[in-house]
Length: 410
Image (cartoon, rainbow, N blue to C red; front, side, top):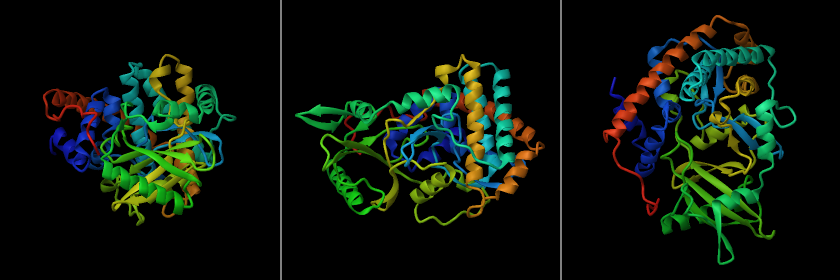
């Protein structure tokens, strides 16, 4: 097998070179951040190992880990806690999703210096609750009225955030006008011609799409940096202003959609989606209890993009903030497991996924859990070795290039 550096460079070769530099830099933070940025390595190694037990087919988000659960506002205006990243989503054995998530528990807990025994207990708890939820055959959802513990506190806090809060972070006032800030480290100036074309495209989308917000016009656009695994993709942020309500604004994110990195490593025949963006939001809609508001797709310069509102309530729980409270961790892991099973149940029997009876039977079976646990434990140690080699290579200039300039135009 090729060296780790060659595998990473080959996978990231199609991405924007300047922002890939940021991706590599971010991945040096710790083993968990590295794991988040290398979903492709996980599935490449999983396919080579071929050691997971048979499991029913399910719609999966593909890149499930501890920080791919979070809050968002649904199109019914309620705030939910749920799986929230579907870029890698596709149809695959249910054990794929579970093994990646359980592996993330071991890696994240070690990065936070939480005892191995607690990590093992949390991994077992995840599997137990996941199976229990599947066996019941009934999906659950979590919003402020049904949330408990730290998730309840988290949802209550984010629900208080307003549009003014997010505008204050992302914009500045200049000559009595609100404009997107390019002093924000996540924002970069666009080439003038590209910016003009993008603004015209989004104004056209607003005018013609049934998903677009009515009576808005684009007032600004920047290149946007966000995430870890998605660094290197084309991503734009637009400031929209209402044409009939004074001082009313929206922030809209437009993110390039590319094929799932899981695809080469699953033998399952996939649907023929019209675009990669259509795949992403279709899977999101069938797995989440309530879809996120203002969720749409578009095609720009022959490439597909997912469009969604940048919400003030959208956030993820950062585990490092409450690593010392074991009870909080217990409740969150329990919730995450129930939501994972619920997403698979909710999308069961749809276009190739297993029916609820088969998923429930899988939940009632215990003979596969030890195999998943064993694989996750071993793979977490492999990620640790990968990370050590990656940091060494990074320091030695193997991924040379330096930081990008604030003057770089996309």
